[in-house]
Amino acid sequence: MNKKIVLFLFLLSLNINAQKFDGLAETPPMGWNSWNTFGTDINEKLVKDIADQFIELGLKDAGYEYIVLDDGWMSKERDVNGDLVADPIKFPSGMKVLADYIHSKGLKFGLYNCAGSKTCAGYPGSRGHEYQDAKLYASWEVDYLKYDWCNTGKINAESAYITMRDALKAAGRPVVFSICEWGDNEPWKWGKEVGHLWRATGDIINCWDCEIGHGSWSSSGVWTIINMRKDIRESAGPGHWNDFDMMEVGNGMTAAEDRSHFVMWSMLASPLIMGNDLREMSKETLSTLINKEVISVNQDKLGIQGFRFSNENKMEIWIKPLDNNQWALSFVNMSDDAVDFVFDWQKHPLSDDVNGRYLDLNKEVYEVRDLTHHQNLGDTSKKLKAKIASHDVVVVRIGK
Picture (cartoon, rainbow, N blue to C red):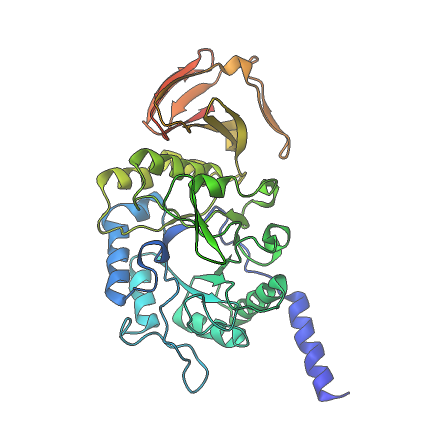
């Protein structure tokens, strides 16, 4: 048989048997990414400082573990062997030394690249170098790869991401694979077998409900992103998540808007990837980000993505079934004024038809816990009453 045919059949057999690494991202990944605040202006000292802040501020204890360098970490050209090279000015010690530092803190290390010929910022992409790059990442002990979608021409998205998935698997080091093609090719329909999370939307920006144009593409605010996709929640679950982009908490919105943003990403079972400067954030921002009771909603082992329950009188109510027959409910004031809100439990049976979960609050009484203010609010035999400031949120957990 022709040697080329033998080689083709061998490679085909590898692809048939290939799969993503199992047992990773069983709950939505939690961590930090450099892009939202720093763009390509990143360096070794910054990343080490961020790792230190994870420990000093209690972020690691709250569950955050990944530190991901986004676009701009590499040189503009590959070396003579075709390998990627860390920018020698920004990262003089190299990626392996930096990874070792992050690992020494008990944290995990992530990098960025792109399925195209160039990254979005014009650095070398992985197209045609997938197996070479994956092997290099494994040698650096990378734990997480964010894989973007710029400069891809007419290549097929699913095939391109499968190629990198297979390359990562062949390299042998377990890596969380973050698909970042902005939802253009409906990754929720094919991403489960390919990656551990996939961007469902375009890029986020630090505003409540806006869209900012950049020519051929645009950035969207928190509620614009929330409203961007419908009927994809059934695609989410342990090991495969709809990613609503990195958070803008601490990047210029009001404290109330930050709280609502954080609660909604938790309700949506979206990865909780911080995007602010951890060295300069306020105590109020830190309090929002390390709220373990809200984080527990995001990290619930059922992995069910929450959904809009009602939207009346500028009050958004979202619900999310949790383990042990518990439920989380968030009440977000969309108006520009504070409201006195009343919710009658007896008039609102909770149901999630997609996951076959129901709760009749007329038959049994459940305790109510305010996760934002860390206090018990009685039980469902009494109406829930709260004064909610503009763009602020009350989130509760009900259960026995």
